[in-house]
Image 1 (cartoon, helix red, strand yellow):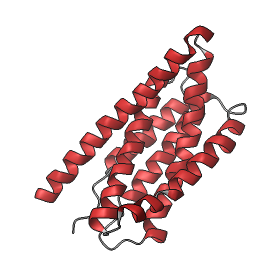
Image 2: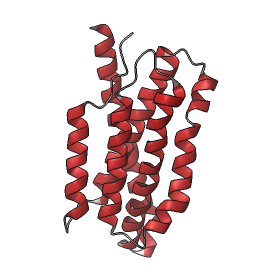
Image 3: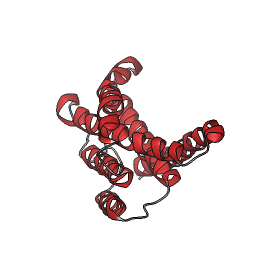
Length: 186
């Protein structure tokens, strides 16, 4: 069985460079772009992990769902506790860069997965690193967008951020699915 197809080393290097540049530039990319990147990374990893768990490792849907608890738990804790505590102490661009670096680490860890990987040693670390990436990136993305918009436009602005996350996630899921199917057919 072929290993999980995910972000390659070149893609990870590009995310690291992007995060480093964006963390220190006075005019980082728009929050819309960060939201799309977040969606792309999250949905890509979730789709890839679902394939890995159910198709490659033979987990039932229930077992695969339980396997995602490491991601969900760290995402909830990091967004409600860590992210909101870092927000007053760090510039939003730097926080977004840290979140993107955590995404890159999680994707890099996912490239090690094979048909013989174990949950505790191989799958959980990737998901547990992705969770804080979500929490640390989400807080400045939503906070920055909401702080620069008029109060009366808050609902529309939040909807745009959510739409960008969904659009990025859709593109990520489609690309990963296409790459996975192409690799399996080869």
